[in-house]
Image 1: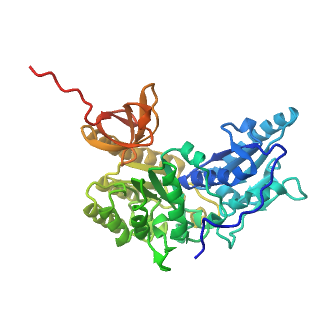
Image 2 (image 1 turned 135 degrees about the horizontal axis):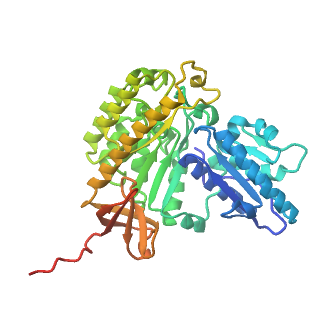
Image 3 (image 1 turned 45 degrees about the vertical axis):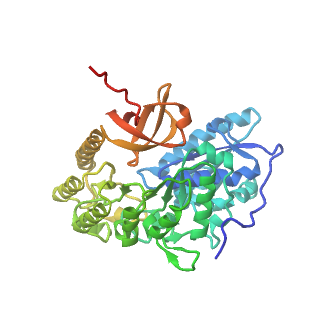
Length: 472
């Protein structure tokens, strides 16, 4: 079994001073945030340090997402702004290299170079471990474009993040354990931009989590395009499920919280549900996308489950973990969606009662089956349906937050609050929580009594600090 912690790394290019600045802009999902962090880790041995502004960066990387509407056009617009900033740097005697990474890079490839000559290199999500070599090739006879699906495992050559970098990123961390998707939903580009489902070996994941824990991380979120399809090689030579992996990670101290996202209903097996039942560290909050409540639309989407099967799954999980709360994804206005189909979605939302949801109007993705369907829905109809759906889900979220008043919740504090003297963190349900307390609590978990709710967050006091009422 390959050891992801002991691998030979490629030679890294060094600048004249050994120090250059890099600005990485992430679009879209949490996996892109993780990938951006690993890009920074990959470039650090080459002398690149991160900067908070693209205007003073020697290298700007746009780590792109292809899921949302007009994603590619937004990237080209950003490239245009960067070209102006680069020209100004050149006028002042400096320079800037521009790189496009991620799923738009994978989908567009050489087309990016044709449409945006300001771009110096293009790298896909499976090859960003080759960034040092690609940067070294900038200025050659041909601009580098690397959108392969390589045989080598990028996780075997990615350098470990430095301890100070882990500390700077805070007490919560993402760890990618699975990539790609074999489901081929008719609206989705992921199988084409991220490839087939692959899973990292258990040993490499454990080693990464142990490094993060040693540096002060207390919460680990496992990531995958289809994370509960995880099927990595275990130290026993057998294939491990996500449930078994979570049991192993729960033994790593001082990690106190585990999460995972994003899941597919078809891959919620018994071992994973049992992990929710048995592991206190596994948070009682699950993002479980359904997309539609209409069986007819689910079939056209190629989701391979029915609304009744989804609702039974919700019930099974709640029976195993009664305090479980759910979020989901919804697409409104999928080709052929009738008023009756949409009403079925609203009924499912009412049946489940979500604590949060992500909802979008359907927009065609080139190359997907949905893009070629003829019965597209009028934009005005999509907008009206989306507004109704969001009113329902936002009402459920407000009700859940309101019901939190008076509860005592364990909160992981990860940052300063909005106002002086405040610190902020997240409840087990990912609710933002603000309290007045000393900054020394940042990086720790403490019980908080919830006293009020704001528009998007909860407010409270440390448990046990409420003044006693005066005795008559």
